[in-house]
Length: 196
Image 1 (cartoon, rainbow, N blue to C red):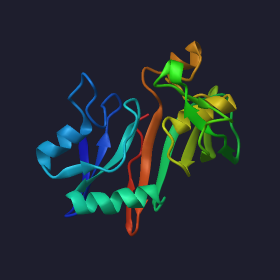
Image 2: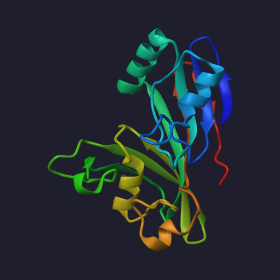
Image 3: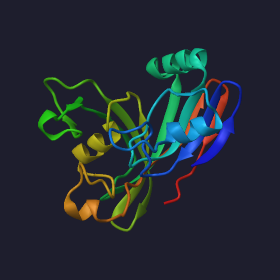
Image 4: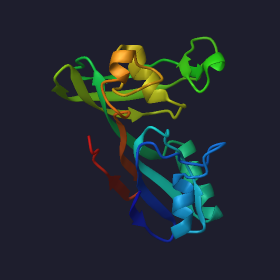
């Protein structure tokens, strides 16, 4: 875990893939615990899936947490991800399908036109890499597993995704190839390219 930025209001880290954002039921090691060793008043304002790497922000103190949590909730924080997906995608587009819990198969989510919540993801193709495509993803909403569900719904699951991809795509990478690469809030802009 690398600390990329710290000031009197917030801390931004580069979370490695495989590390929980917050403690799990049987796993106390997580990004928030590691950050609190260095910054005891650090508080969570958003999360990344355990399998996702990249930029994760923490507030310093309760007042900063209230302000930053409101910024995330009211979509004043810009987020972009880089992913490598199966198949060839070209150009750009907007994915608009509702996402909701797949209750019998938790923690899986699913496209659910009856009970799901409205979800939007912008995407841009960057480059073809053999049979795969490197894309930029910009979630306009913040549903659980939204990017993974949306890409799988398009037929372009993210490489290494053991929840939403078929066996061949899941086995194509030892880790999920999804990385939170940009965060911007107000005048602050953080950039962290993926290692894949």
